[in-house]
Image 1 (tube, rainbow over the protein chains, first blue to last red):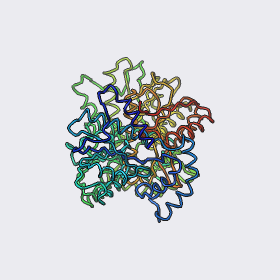
Image 2: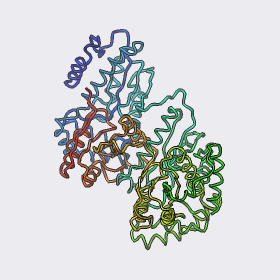
Image 3: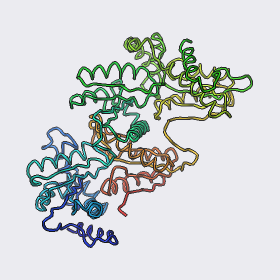
Image 4: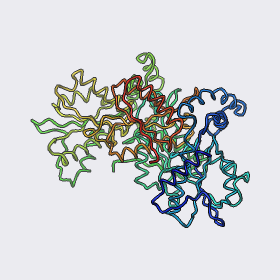
Length: 318
Length: 318
């Protein structure tokens, strides 16, 4: 594979001076590598792979849920292929993402060998969701290498169920089907944000802000970003001690509003068995109808009916 | 006014021990107060004020743009009044927001007298957008007090054109109509985030992330919050040196997606005469079709047609 050769050459030149004679693409006999499985969407490395990439993409119900997906997806993929082929031709004859991912992975594995010899050798694998190498190809390679310890490492910095979630689901299906081998010990890096699962309380902090119509959001209003930044600042201050969500309240009228809605989120947590929730109004500076009536009387009442235990937290004056 | 009396009493008891004999609700003769105008939506202090509050709210095109607004707004307000009156009755016979706002304002003015004697005396005014005291009542009070220096201080921590924007527009209209008096020197606190306007570069940092369908967002996906947190972290690192926006790219299909769209945002900045933009892909870890084709070839080309100068920034490997 040309791209891999190129990645290895570059990786070697980059790691010179670190005292690493070779990269660990061939683990020493007797010790199986710690696998770092780099998960991403992927892209067609050559223009002719475009159709299969699109078909895999439109077949993924985690990314795009379609009615009659197995019938409609191939049709959409065929129809869109010529235009997307042209786009890949325009950026140089294919997607560079496999080349870059291997480069990043090989350099990371070399660094990990230095930083954490106890789990060496480390070997980077690439598992793309829609392009080659697909998860089953990667799984077979891991099986051949006798992998016993693996880290699923998303290349999407921020979590979404449609990206990292879809890749993890695919990995789980292949593992369940026996494709990866027996007795593999997994750990998962599912986003690049700071968090500390070990010390984390199981109380969910549910930040609730007044929603906005999507017509305002789509015009470029900065409120969604600024409220999110407020939540991130609070969570930084709390050293990410708790799981948290940002949800949106007080929608009115028939038009589309920013979600997830606070009431739906409370019901959802209750369905998941999360009974301890602190509801935090994040965009209000004093009590009024939307904190006192909607949060206190409506949402908490609804939530108590489905039985989570709710504590409400408000910034009071003293 | 009962609420004001109560606020003064509480504020006095709170400031005891700070060596402040009186609060500065009556500025000394000869020196006009520095006005801190607390802007908020407001709420009906008593249940019978509910109808006027709702009517003012539905009349506000900055908050809810309606077709034939001046005809439809009164009708919606009348129809919703009974239900909302009941809600205010349920939380104790009216909105507490005026009481809390005066309390916060009076304590802040007392603190400012201590912290910044050069601009003392400070006096807090309340200008609600939909409930009493409305902006024109407040403006008349400021005029009577002979205010020459004023700070418009939003009580919405995060900026939205539908909240702080609407209040500032109202203030501007009353000022233009002469309601506040001549020669008032204004400054504006339009959000509570950190920023440093004096040293700020005029290059706009436009962070672009792959969008998500609203069906996924509304199901509670954390991606929007996590991408926003990434942007906030970058801006913190840059000490908020530039104006910035978070926009969303690569929408496909007819359903609703998270916005504002990257392409629309570039055109919008060009219309505003903002010619210097750095486009920053914030949710991608390597180049691929959406950075190379959409950002490089499509958006930058479109933007150059409307003539802003664009520099693209990508995280490369070395």
